[in-house]
Image (cartoon, rainbow, N blue to C red; front, top):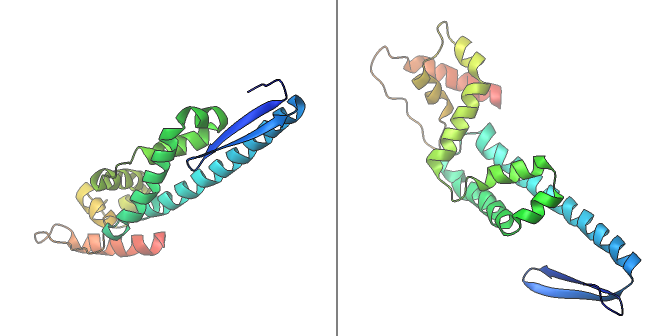
Length: 179
């Protein structure tokens, strides 16, 4: 706010309000620019760290039951923070940061089936050549899903001659290949 005796900036952070008063016009513009750059840097780092953790737990690996609470914490935190200040984030952040924040927020509240379907869709595209060539015949869709679904406990159960051994061989090679 512009005042007779100088500008006043009001900040709200962690539920508390703070004011800087009696700032000269020239200095206050520089201060605002500096604060916005610093906040942008911090929010950018926050989004990238959350997205990196999410990618490791959801894209790179199957979203296991034992990891769901951690994944939910990541997406919940981003969804709440992004939801509170969506217009500000869109104004100050790059499109890539906004895209990552919106992707994470889309998974809150956490739905494990939706999350796992997202992982499977991604991996089926990424690993198509592997699935087509791991055995003499390409794996079927059910076999591919059997390879990808690596929860905390796993069992391959199917009738004779349906490709259980192919699934187990492909699952072992997939685990080795993807680390």
